[in-house]
Amino acid sequence: YKEIFTFPIKDYYIAAGVDFTKDSYEDLAIDFIKKYQPRSLKCGLFYGLENTFKELNELGVSCYILSASQRSNLYEQCESFGIVKYFKDILGIDNIHAASKIHIGIDYIKESNIDPNEAIFVGDTTHDYEVATAMGLRCYLVECGHQSKNRLSEVNAPIISTTSDILDVVKRENKIF
Image (tube, rainbow, N blue to C red; front, side, top):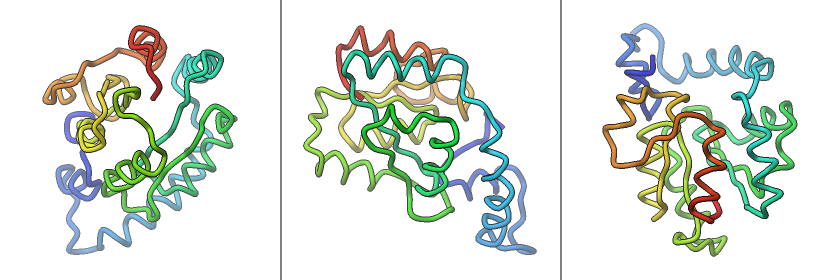
């Protein structure tokens, strides 16, 4: 999974061997989300993640989520885990097809007057690096997410081991993200 996962998600399914001649990607995506969303609310957060965001908030760091997940599903997940309070904004796409979030990130950074020199982007995929680059942000990639360390090393971004390492990066950079 971590060696072939990619965006857009449709490309991941093709790499995994899904044949869309029998069922369309759009139909399979609907079926997947119907099953995935309720189950996702029963998952846990990465160890130490909530504490990391709590500490970042205590340091006065503004935190945001930018995801290729449908915004309403993403918000429901954040509410379920009790972490909405740690984020200044939670941004997702307007559909379930997880194509790209680049345009959302670019528009948001312009509208919010966020100085790219004062922000960092933390993600877990090579697509996150593409998004950060398009937004003009420095990017750090976490190896405990959707892609392997091997895949993450394909792009020119520092790789951190765990979500708890985000706090060390922010303290070292003395920046927001």
